Image (cartoon, rainbow, N blue to C red):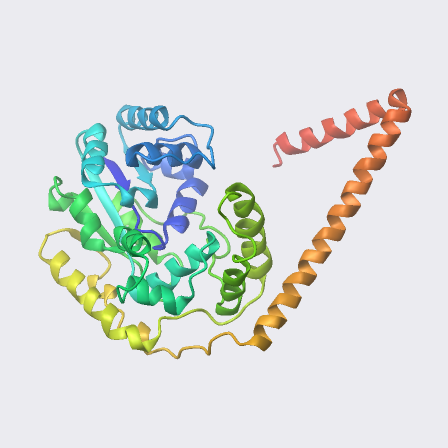
Length: 377
């Protein structure tokens, strides 16, 4: 069986993918493998499937060759192979059909789904993490109200329209080989999404190591608003690699992510809109005969939209968060300056007396290598 999991984005995909990698050996014993060397190779392959370039963030893999190797390994393995990437949901219908045809017989399609009351704030925040500057009210008017920025609205619905993704990916598959896995509601046990995914793989969910912490954790409302305003002064365009490393991976994740605040929730004024869309999805998907793991009614977010909306971030809280995050950055600058000073002193000493200092530096480097490759690690 060849399982192709195409997302959708923000539906626990990072959690499921990390679980698959963490338990690679255990799952292989249960007959489940991933036919790629690592996530970079898979990402390159998805770019080939979608016919897109990603020149500013090279993976080191040729996209076409990466895809061909993944397909070849999928055919070579007699058990179950899993290809999981939320980027695949953006493929056009002909691209999706070509990808499935390359994998041959016994292909099963999996979509993980979540209600729009959670998806819309999550997608807005993810966009801010990638440099967007649109406020949350402006974003809601764009993707739900149909006003402004057609390209952004089209990108959102191409990834989040459940029926549309099924139309592109499942058009030529028997309905019994299309699996819809719904994300459990908030407060469900941590392993429930994995248990549902394991049911599709026809394996026991027990005994696996689940990822620690909150994978791809969300920022609080104050933090994401601070990041959105920062994007106006540190734009992503033209410095994409630096933006990802410094802003997204360090400032947003490590600095702002360490401070708690109330989350961004969908305003009640949009409740009827997302409920209507969710109900339409349930009706259409329910008639198609797809295999559902979970409950399609979880796509109707009536219970989600009743929770209280936090007040919008005010100047006082924004200032407090700015001061706190600045203090963290200053501590990091001090640490890096000290580290740089130590390196400079070693370089000067080596230049003055290389015979004396070079053997010691070599021994220290060798010790670091031994620690990295020791069995204890």
